[in-house]
Amino acid sequence: MNHSYSILFIILVSIYEYYKTKESMFVFLLPIIIWFAMPSFYYRLIVFLIFCIAKAIQLIASKNILKSQFLAMYLIGAALLCFEYGDLIFRI
Image (tube, rainbow, N blue to C red; front, top):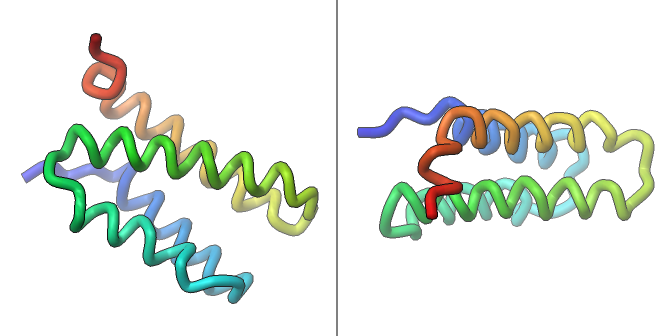
């Protein structure tokens, strides 16, 4: 079984974002659904990277200074994902 601390970090950040903002339950359900719905680990990595980038773009577009901590956390999660599994994600 593959143990990915970066994916665990992303899931925990999304749960923490829901806990702090109480905006939408979809924020933390989406990573959990991705984890159980994707058939292979390779596709999970790609979708989690896209999820982090999309959340970062969403937080930049909201222009809310209070959510800048979540922006930093999602960018750190994307960077961890790239450093941990960059050879799998970016293979040609």
